[in-house]
Image 1 (tube, rainbow, N blue to C red):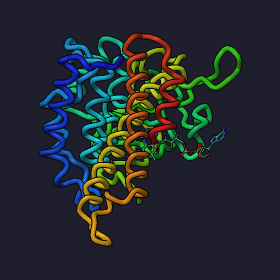
Image 2: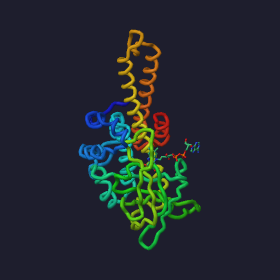
Image 3: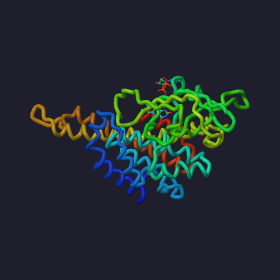
Length: 324
Ligand SMILES: Cc1cc2nc3c(=O)[nH]c(=O)nc-3n(C[C@H](O)[C@H](O)[C@H](O)COP(=O)(O)OP(=O)(O)OC[C@H]3O[C@@H](n4cnc5c(N)ncnc54)[C@H](O)[C@@H]3O)c2cc1C
């Protein structure tokens, strides 16, 4: 049984009202002009949307994953690009600090992220490391009390508008002689770090997607996020949670497409009747509605398992594969 609590329904309504009033009317233009909704992110921060799944102690709203993905669906339904950047800001930009950061890192980075005062990005993908995240080639070498980072990241969401990017880098070898990958916090603007936006995407163009070049970038030794030796497991865990939010984004985009198709089918008349009276069109609309219901139900299942601290890896992967 999936019945939303009063609090979850309130968050859903808050996100829906905001998204329909502030995002939907401008979504088409923003997509056309690749315009990142910086002002809207400030509003979302003020509404508490960027801190939904984090405790109040860290500037969050004390909500759960299900509440967060309800907001992702509403925002994605109004504007796919904003929805993508919102999903990434919370699940990739902020969540790693919550799960793996030290208290000092949580204070310094998570609190402003959850309050929506800053944005963060997560840089894992590289020209030769995508599905095969273990193929990371970026390196970080200790030089005295500093890490010296060299490498290239691609497809990194929100980096141009972020305060810091958490990048994955090879920092040595583990006990079995395999690459040891760590996650390192790099403040945007650190000398040697170049961020560009070279991509001509087919959609979600309001979302900021970046290439990052790191040339002898120096950060203090304590910039490692969490356990230096567990970077690989940390980001696999982060990606599991991220999959649920991208699945929710896809449900939002699908719901919007369905509603627009339904409205058009009632408006457009052929052979003396609206398209919606033709059975072949009714079948298509019914299939769309059915698939969206199934998709949403499964996303809620994955989120509910995560909230119950039960294994959700498989469900998150199925949700993303089915919905995306
Ligand atoms: C809009 C957008 C935003 C993104 N934001 C971020 C971000 O914020 N941070 C970040 O780190 N990354 C980000 N990414 C990168 C994303 O996570 C990668 O695209 C993903 O890891 C897949 O890597 P790839 O695109 O290089 O595809 P590849 O790994 O090159 O895969 C290409 C194809 O081969 C298939 N394939 C790969 N391996 C196998 C296998 N073993 N068996 C069968 N088939 C296989 C894949 O399914 C795919 O169809 C973003 C991507 C996009 C498009």
